[in-house]
Length: 119
Image (tube, rainbow, N blue to C red; front, side, top):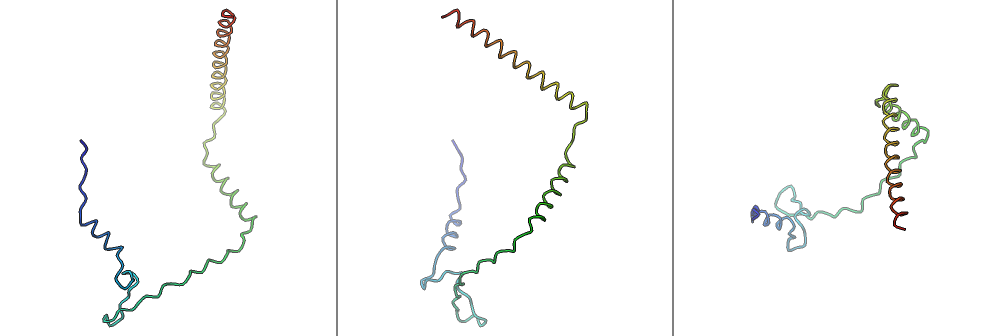
């Protein structure tokens, strides 16, 4: 049996109050009190926001230089293997490739023998 937490009924009531619109059609965020706090002033809906002006084109040479500087700084952080590590890693790869090749050859030969025997 799963146990679930019962929701507070007060949370649901608060959510409903936030979205309510007053009878005169104004939401709470559209109402502003004047300095006297005696009369309610309607807030003017903002006009369409102006679209930002396109930025001037950035110099392509500067972009390339920035990219190359970043690439070289990242290459400095790379752990480059020394000669001994390269020989070890290469030999591991060559041995693995030879082993997989021999396994494929063995299975191919065995299946060829079985098919010749059946046919």
